[in-house]
Length: 214
Image 1 (cartoon, rainbow, N blue to C red):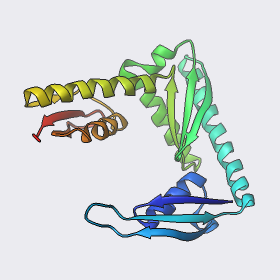
Image 2 (image 1 turned 60 degrees about the vertical axis):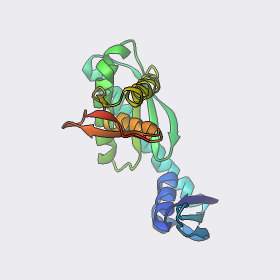
Image 3 (image 1 turned 30 degrees about the vertical axis):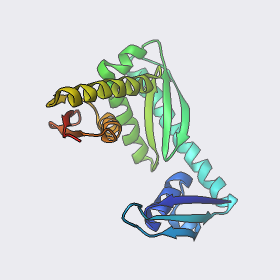
Image 4 (image 1 turned 120 degrees about the vertical axis):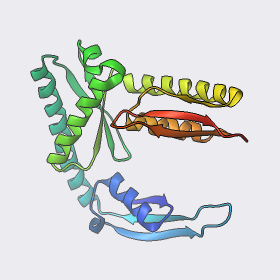
């Protein structure tokens, strides 16, 4: 099998291949297809072509599926022992991440206030995944909460940014986990005259939205 990957450097492109294919660097050959130099108005890029045997890829996929199933079983057993049993299934697999969805009559409790219980379950799932040697990151969701939460946060942040740009000064957003903060930083980072920075300690920090002028 042959696939192509791109990055700012050869190492970044190779790292993306390793993450996507879930195999070690020694298990595939690399051919540099294109390399552009960094200029004043353009970032340099490196595009590589990866050659990997179907046999190696099939063996890796089997191991990966076994570990995925172990994480699913771990979560289901955890929910049962908590007294809130539910069914866990795979929702998607992309960019080194696996999405797991919980179906349970106790979903509202498992999600918790602003998704904090869901975050705790996700943390435990990833700690367990690390112990069994999985390099994938697991995203745990229930009732499509995370997608709805992201959409609401983006709308709220954009509204606050417009108010700050209109009235000046700054506004502090609600506490968010690292993923949510990264989403807001990325969203508002493209808005002219707006700056964002995280404040506080611990996992759930707040983002301050500031007007810096044109």
